[in-house]
Every structure is written in C-alpha cells, then in structure tokens.
Length: 183
Image (cartoon, rainbow, N blue to C red; front, side):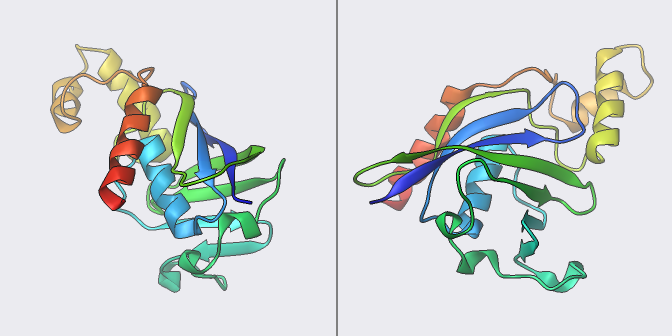
C-alpha cells in the first residue's frame, strides 16, 4: 500500500523562522522530493543541491561535492527514511542554505497522490541574497527606509519584502497545478 510522509522542513540559521509542513509520496525519488521542497520553500531551483541522509550524500552533480555521492534520481524516499528520522537538504552551495527535515508522520493512502502543503511560516529568502548572514543584513536594510542601500535592495528583490509572509494554500495550489500539468 502506498503512503505519504509528512515532513517538516526548517531553514536553519534564519530569523524569523522559515518552515513548511508538506506531504510527499513515499515513492518519490529524492530528485522529485527536491522539486517538491523547492516549490514548498519558494526557491527557484537555479542552484545545485544535496541531501544528507544518515552517512550518505545524494547529489545530482558530484563534481562540487568532495565525498562519494549517490544520484538522487535513483533512490526513493520510502526506501531511505522512517517515522521520526531527520535528514538535511542543502541548496545553493555558494549561499549555503541548510534545511533540517523531520519525518513527523507516515500516512496510508489509496489512489494517485501528489505533494501537499499543509502549513508553514515565513517567507523564503530571495535567491542569491548571501545565505543566512546575507539574509540577516538584507532584512536590516529592508527595515530601514533611510538606509543607503534600501532602494537598491528593494528594486533587486522586486518590491517590498515581508519576512513573515507565507500562504500554505497558495503553495498547495502550485502543487495542484503542477500535478494537473503532469497528469
């Protein structure tokens, strides 16, 4: 019987806290999980990524990873994790975004299933903002309209930025549209 994993994804080293709670089918490859995590978090997917699960590293392009690695397209989530497990998702090796993922539930399901966003909090930092430390500086500048770089960064990020903004329903609509496009 198929099942879905309920995952809590937390972006490490940022304030305010950024997290998501999603359901991911157990038969998804880690490459598909990667796509779902990008959608849930709000990342654009323009950088390399890796998973660290127990003592193994799963990375699409091992050129930039010094250790032995496994292609994430060759392994399924359900074969690697169990209820209560924690693992890491690294995105953008230059900025160094690290996510802690906890398997909080495993639910049986019947029929066709897709990723689902249940909850979350906090806006995804802009791509290429400079990792957790660059993001902290970005938030300080954005909070001070008198800062010499405020207008420059406001324009760079496409307007005002609300670090607390997140809409789980909006993310789930994106998941639904991706699912209907692949059906």
